[in-house]
Image 1 (cartoon, rainbow, N blue to C red):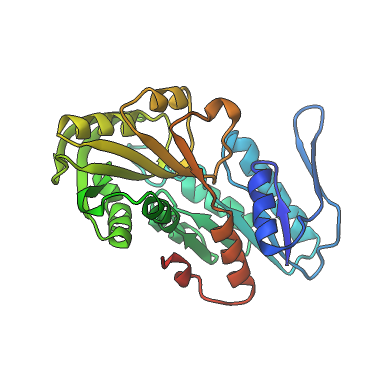
Image 2 (cartoon, helix red, strand yellow):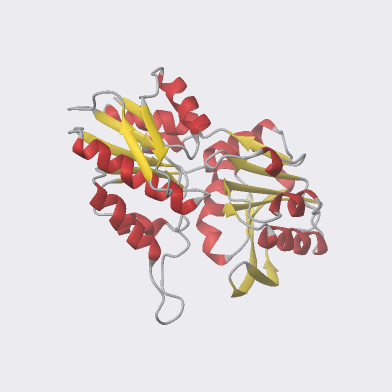
Length: 311
């Protein structure tokens, strides 16, 4: 087993390597004067099972292209198996045609990763689980819910007055999984999107009066959806609202919007690096390194992945 990291999230890669008690492999990524990415693998990979860790996060196109070039480098270096660990899978929201003449970009990206030479993909919380079917290679789809559930249990919240809230109908399975971990009820926010990154709340399904609400989603991008959802919950009698997500995309002024909102805390995983200007007082960042490291260990030694998701 050899672990290599792209440039998208070096600190997460280092923490995964530390969990596995191995050193990161040596790889150099530079640029030509016109911006072209150049990759050099600085140690032998012939016959090795390699694991490349690279979330395709901001800058998304650079991160994705760097990943593809790294995969190709190992393919040409005669690696035995190329396992691609993508904690956050960019372009996942473009998984279907909403209007005529639109691309299905998530499928295109899946094809590119496969064509480059990947033998397996490991990721956490796809935007939609059916994205696994976009790949013609094995996909190990991990879940962030157990990490968030453990944090909630550590806070010793009153579970009798805790309700898990899905910010839309599509997120109900995710909310139900977390509710089953915690043995609590769920509620659903009914909304519509007139256009990307804009949301209109219509109603709340479920009892949230005098409850601590935990809104769970796969990602927080601009923060508008989660903030409007929190305001609707408070207006319907909720005592307090905590937001939780796997992927902290935090575009534009999301950090300020979330800090100034009625949310009491925002909990996320470190699948995407949090820069200093994106950190704020209400933010709680949980590590995904252990679950990714353990998944890599189990894949390498042909052990079960499903038992990872037991509390």
